[in-house]
Amino acid sequence: MNIAAVDYDGLIPNNVALGQDVRVKRALEKWHPGYINWWNDMGPEGFQEALVYLRTAVSVDPKGWAKFDYVRMPEYRWGVLLAPQHEGRKIPFGTHKGEDAWQEVPGEYRAMLRRLVVIQGDTEPASVEQQRHLGKTAPSLYDMRNLFQVNVEEGRHLWAMVYLLQKYFGTDGREEAEALLQRRSGDPDTPRMLGAFNEKTPDWLSFFMFTYFTDRDGKMQLEALAQSGFDPLSRTCRFMLTEEAHHMFVGETGVTRVVQRTCEAMKQAGIDDPYDIARVRKLGVIDLPTIQKKANLHFSLTLDLFGNEISTNAANAFHAGLKGRFREDRLKDDHQLESGTYPVLRLIDGKVKNEDAPALSALNMRLRDDYVVDCNIGVGRWNKVIADLGIPFEIKLPHVAFHRHIGEFSRTNVDVDGNILSPAEWTERRTEYLPSSSDKDYIEHLMQPQFEPAKFASWIAPPKVGIDNKPGDFEYVKIADA
Ligand SMILES: [Fe+2]
Ligand SMILES: [Fe+2]
Image (cartoon, rainbow, N blue to C red; front, side):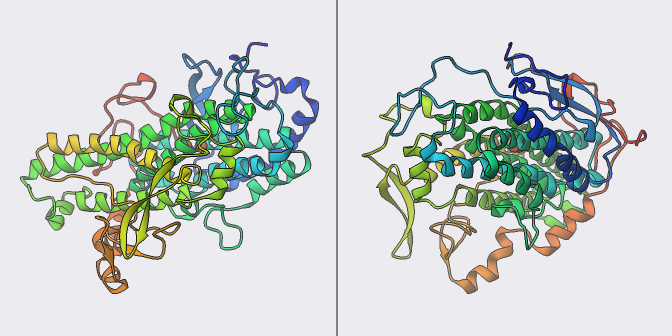
């Protein structure tokens, strides 16, 4: 069978020959109604009948994998798609380095592997839940369409992980697949597994920051899992990364357009001082210091997703060959890390300092460092827009110790420059760094829907190009048909 082509005949589009795999096909078909119920209950609120111009994966060939068309979201074809198998692939790191990649779950690592799949799987529906109210305040049909595209693809990512659970983990895999539909973002009794996925996404600036910062954590995790010696996981994650790129595009360009609109409005009104917040807000745009605070919030919440700086779990998963480093295949070392060290930021005698730790224990720190480098690329692009419009302001990522809830700095108060604050100083200065309730109220009052083709809310610039090269007045979502 041609792996690049996807079989669209059955209930579940796939390129894993599901037709010949009766047990797994039945298990997934049994899981399907629960998924649809979850989507109807927890997916985008108020737009389930709208026709949305969405891309659907029809192939796993990187050169032409998607087709665009109007779809009602509950009818989206969520499929199981794995990137093509590399003939003769070897386990690229850890104690089994150089052995044939596993096509079946290695018994000794079963529990560890299942946990990695479940944690990744849990984040996918969580973000759909977090974003379900946003359609109602979309600043344009273009943005609404992008939101829904991200949402249906996160739904597909859930399918991707559920396929692995159903195919490779028997009864407990089936139970985990059920549980993925039971937990709810922010629910006090049955929350999602990771903190950032239980936070609210109350407005569109949060959505753009989330897709910029938090989907980028997703990218880092998927890159690390794409290296896995367990080949089906590697292939699944490789294809998910194709979709993930669009999510980060939505975040990066979303923030760019907000920043651009703010600077253009300031220029037009003759305001040079970005801290003249009252005057800037009169223009119906989001002042740059508030955008900075939102970035501080989402960056710091996302850093917590990388876990403890020093981690035995991460060391074990690497040693076992299950989860590698960011782009392991491009790194030049022994890929086993039994010796060697890595600098880890620690709190030593009341100061934030680097200290060498065994490289194997410091893998979370290393992935987080790679993440910060990746984050800074887009921040540089935002700053270029600001500079080109002549406003004296620079967006900066806060210090990694700022506002942390997990790891080395979770019990310390640190400002955005890495200075330690007393609890009293932190309380007093918190709203210098993080959105205050009046900042939140201001943003919320701006969130007025704009559902006319070609029109955009006051606080955001139109995109440079349309999706699928569509013209500016294209009707990306047909709400009237709802
Ligand atoms: Fe995802
Ligand atoms: Fe994503």
